[in-house]
Image (tube, rainbow over the protein chains, first blue to last red):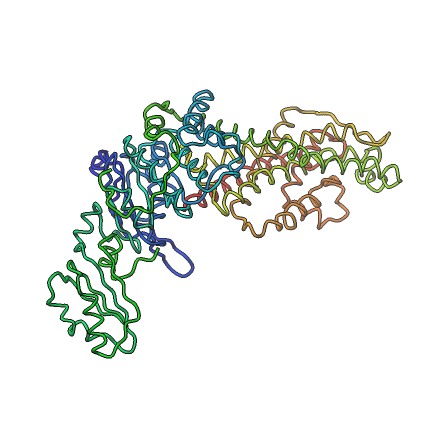
Length: 327
Length: 303
């Protein structure tokens, strides 16, 4: 066991400068550019970022289906490259797409997965029954997997990922394409699992999902971790600011920030002027919007639209990247 | 949960998935502890194939039986009755019925088509759209074991397909057209059958891995049809001596070695390729295709 392995042994997940570069005819695509993470056993951890940020590639490397081109990663103390089979024994994976076995019934999906993981016939049947009850799928046990609704299929995917009591449960965008009600139900279920001690790593591009579920979040974009911590820590680290954005019409607002005396204003941490808009990061938002409108009309500009974002992961993202969050 | 500080979407009274609080306890604490081994996982995967085959029994049966049944019916019953039998029967010289030529040929044809269809079609589906291959790829075995499992399952279906031909040819023919068949060497028969089956299912794995799903119809036009028509199904290879260039060209077709191999062990009186050449190509081809197929498959699953 190397020094690295020893460090990884106490963690559910550890990555060091993990990288993935795809070679294509148009050159290299850097999907993941050096991600380092530590997730403790029992933790509910979120990878938050817009589509294309590298979340799925990262989860792919942690679940052994994507081979890293650099760095290292361990899951449950096992190196994902050196011992992928050892890792597969210890993880449950809910992929983003519906990978249920469409030729099999709901119960058979669970039974055969149990048997793939070494349970005997009787144990597999008992395990399947347990999971069907727990996940509210008992009345659909004989239905073919093709006949399930989106929410039911997602529940079965999660149940199937849990047949062998994995150390770590990976969920890639678990509530994408689900209706709001089903999503809330799924959240409740994941919270229950976590309460029972299940380590969970989830990727999501929904800010509110990360806020609602995860103990710690890593904000990812363009293959890199921009910031990581608890949601309150992230907000604190990014200034816990309200972000006020005003777009103008009729000229460039470059001079406006000065006119509205924003820089000296108490609570203001940052003022950005870009194209036709002014963006103010502030802890004391009262009156700022009004002043921006006034200053605009004094300069002969009309306001096209204005937004005020309360401190949230969205404002954290804006602060870290200077870009609006694109879901 | 300690960090549930975020915005909650409008909360409708949620229909609980199960009794609240019960999910975790039931499925985490009280579950049996699994002990996967390579053999158990492999057998469980084979059992899954068996379950699916059994579920689609009628479809599988019709798929396997219609081609040989219709061929035999037309060529050994209808044609002799309407006076066309001589065209075919003459191929191997006097005294040999067309059924005798057709039996090993059709068996080889079944080995080839069933082996490829059993592996290629499902695999193309698994790689496309929802990429359901990821499900099996997460089973606790190396990816190449998954490839070997697919080859094995395909080979079993190919052998069953080939064996179905025997009773059909023995039963369906016009009077006087019965085949003359006997197994001269059982171990050799088994080697030819098994090697042929593994060869086609390995080829099926390679094709299923590399094939663009939008070009599936090419499988028939570019591979199955030419391989079957020029695979010495309806004539022994030796009969091609009058078209020497074709006789040489057909040697690239793996099906030729299956047909001729089965002729060597079932109907040696019709003449056949040299046995050493047959075995070399069947065993060597199987090894090569198994290596290439497994390698391509592993590379496609892991990206």
